[in-house]
Length: 607
Figure: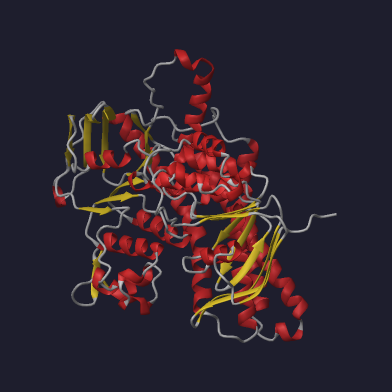
């Protein structure tokens, strides 16, 4: 007999003024569920978590919590007022009758590496986030509600959080923009879309194909019920289907760019790179040679050298406090090295995205922020009307005259991106650009970076984002050593894990100086001289299978185009709708399979 849910919501509704945030929400949560809650910024995800936590009252509906079940909620923007140390923050999570069990706080502080005696106001965003996570976990709840838990966390801490959630016996509902994090921890997905909550009993890794299927069914149903198609539904559908096709092409281009970067790294030590001065542009954007920087007794960077060429998109990763922002300041000459030198190509125009959003004036409207005079913005060689440009960044036309101070955190981040990307530049510096962005906006940023002809330096802890945009990754270990790896962030992480495992049995004898991983070699599990029979067979037959599916999809769409079909034969209509979604998903999977084999073939031929 199945165990009863520990939490149930039935018919829950909530409105703010005339705006209906969600309607008739039905959900249940079982012990041990690991749930990703996704949706666009402003869709009501955070508010729904507050309703579940009992912080926000619903207008109507029923919420049933199984007797004895404890719920712990971690907000996106926690309040640290009144706390003198991070240890006090953690201790505040203990239930009143268990306040004498301070050893539990010390245990979790040690496990998470929290700087316990540090004042919250003097702590980094990552340290504050770890403390609030520990506060949420210390009470041993049955249901964990986490709103953007990975913001400001470094990759090792995110990986530890993933393990904590996987091993957690209770249920977890997570809001996050970090795709890889959600892929790794979720077994169920809730999608809050235009006030309706959809449930899929699969993890987030299956979200896009499920989302596309739901939207396709909605559009078909609206068409054949002679209803007006909502503009937003059609836009969302176009975005979802086009994104998958663009991602295939982007992946191919990114692999080629990574190969180019490997070759640049190989050549850097053997030939002199000439500076091209024609058209005011330089092939060599930044050169750093044997740079060192220390603060007091702590060495942030030692003997680091790099040559960055036009078009490179370079990610910078490492633990919090490793010096990633300092390295960016050294490379852009905002900060002078203690020794070594940095030179920058001629006529470099830089746009700098600061994670603190310091350039925004809360009193200005969005219109005035982007366009102080007139009504057009000059963006990448063409004039755009300010409202049309704002729509590119998912703002509604009526928001153009809204003051910046009224925007949410995610909307402020979007506006800052729009502002920086509207400036003429050939060097783009992004410091934690994905914090507080929803996934649609991250997709938008990925497309902008894919089309950007200049060079980009990107500090980020978002592994999936870096996998999609970075041609190479600089890893900073935290002890001053740094090296560049010409591959994806995920491949780098795997190599670092393997390196740690090799060293761990005899770690006492290993040198304190970490040896950089060879950046010039493409990451491979083992040598492969040619395609296997199965791979070659797939390369031969998949194009015909894809073409057959396209014909099948075309035939189904033709039959569905009969506007009277639903009235005459609703069973056939439902059958065709399901067949269409299945055929489209199968076609997408076969296209991705063909692309992977084709990329492998190119790699083998170019060795």
